[in-house]
Amino acid sequence: MRYGRTMTERTSRLGWIVAMVVFVGLLVALYSIKARTLGAKARVHALEQTLVHEKQIVQMLAAEIAHLESPKRLRILAEEQLGLQPTPVARTLTLSEAADQMARREEKPVLLATGGAQ
Figure 1: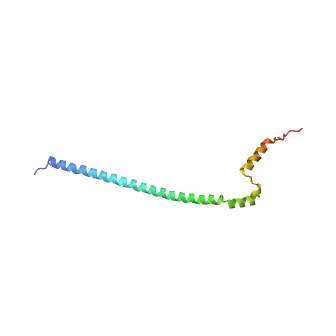
Figure 2: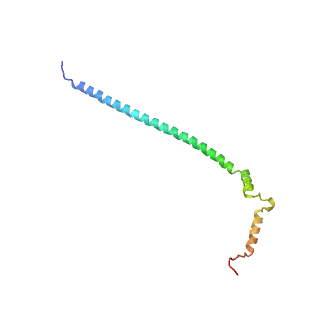
Figure 3: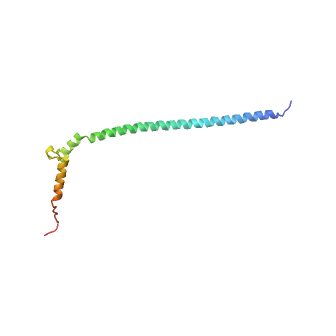
């Protein structure tokens, strides 16, 4: 019996060691990729939840704006707090009437009041 090993036995053993090191390296790389993927999935889920929450906030704000801009509400506030009333139809002008009035105003001389003593 020989105590030394043949070249093919050493090469075969070295091949197995290299294969095991490569296998362990691939396992580590696979685990690392899987961990990063799970982290990315968690971040995507968190962003989706944030997006849903923000959409709800936008809907709520749109409803609040619609309420605040309601003509009925604004009319009531104008009457109660400012004492304003809707303009009667008799006081409204058509476009041609408004143009005629503007033309008449431009024809009249404008007198400016001076602030000094005379």
